[in-house]
Length: 460
View 1 (cartoon, rainbow, N blue to C red):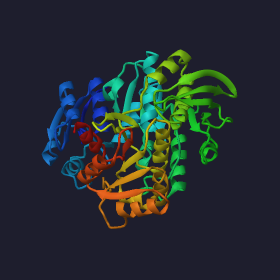
View 2: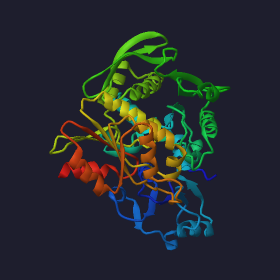
View 3: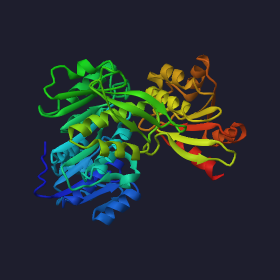
View 4: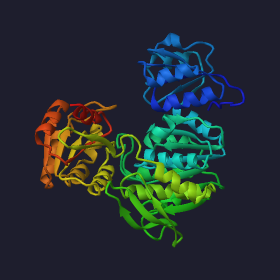
């Protein structure tokens, strides 16, 4: 594998430079003095920002974009081997790295690199970790899979030994990472278009944990089924966290304010330590925050800065995000949840928020996930007073006819729920305007573009 020499900046070309993760890596290299260029299919805020920072951005992917003066090409899983730039790179024998491989090498440049993994909660937990590090004036570098207001985007390039990033299990890309501290929030069945099932997913997380150095730290959810399996034979330090009192970091006396924000007593090794208040909603974020506290205490950050950082951190964009109230008095919330476990957590958080009836506009994400977990989706959504179903968001897949949102609608109703299949966004908006009443809570939910429904309703 090609090794980047950060003491000798070279010319790096990014295929898909405008992507949320690729643009962040490009910005880090620009800060390190590298010559950065790349291509994307269209202009965006990301590409415009990179241009302002000195990157060369080409719109359109063509073979002639790959010049002889390029030292390294970085690409993502979305780039097919028939891509003209990929083909040209191979023909010219220019070294190549995947996005994850480059990120792993960047991590090696930081003494305190923290990787946040798990099937759910990565972005919110990375946000919490970032807020704590910023509160403590550590000047961290941050790479996050969403937009974080406190850093004005998805990337922050600092000037210290601290680095925090999300670590996604899809395609095992995080196996290329080199963290000093890793968090494993949970292990659940997802990305079943890649993994054969939960056992293979658990094995993937175990391999990720084994990447840690002997003097590193694994912070792992002690409430889940696969903790012992993942931790077996590890040489690094291990801290467990969770809502069960036997964990090293746990919580007691949990209460919620009228907007669903938790306050709890931090318990470390069975001893009550302090009162923690969060600005992120839901009991699942109590668990997420405990993992952050474990990392922060290992890094020597004071409890004062930990508490301040956690309290200052609202949920990230599209994580139980309060969008506003319509002219008819309907409360609009948007959430990225696209897995049954995430849906259940979001709807549990909604129960701690004052409202009359609970409406969920759900846009399933990918056919394989919807098909594999259809019963789990139906069960999770059946707790709502009303569910309105949009068509499945295909993402990287094609519709083979294996399942539709109509099938999911039938499943919800068979479990005692109240679901209506409408498919198109316009029909859903019309239905909401005619049927939602004052003080009803409407959650637009999914990893696609379903959030546009709430945005349109609020503008009317």
